[in-house]
Image 1 (tube, rainbow, N blue to C red):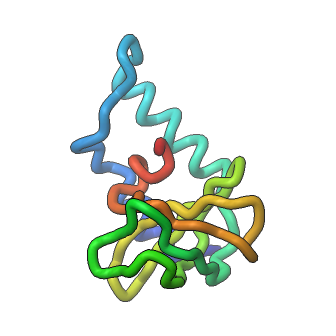
Image 2: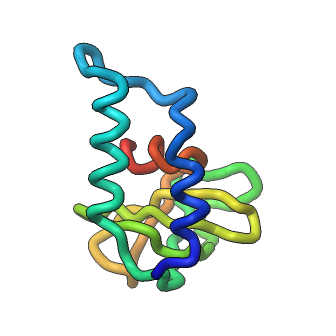
Length: 113
């Protein structure tokens, strides 16, 4: 079991600041995101990505950083960085060449993005 799933579970209740697509039922939309994320659960391996534009506050473009994998689907990797207690989205075809393009924060936002 992934030790960071408990932290993720608590964070999945926060939907503030996430835009629901027009015409979607808000509770159903968020539950669909949660369900899909759970279906894509992954083992907690440490993976790294290179910071790409637009970047992150406190990280330089081209630098690499790591986080623990929570879920993955379609070149989309949700990770948790435990020192910062921050969720990030990485993109790429495999763990040898991932990019981090400025998406972090709420895990539902990261997964939706």
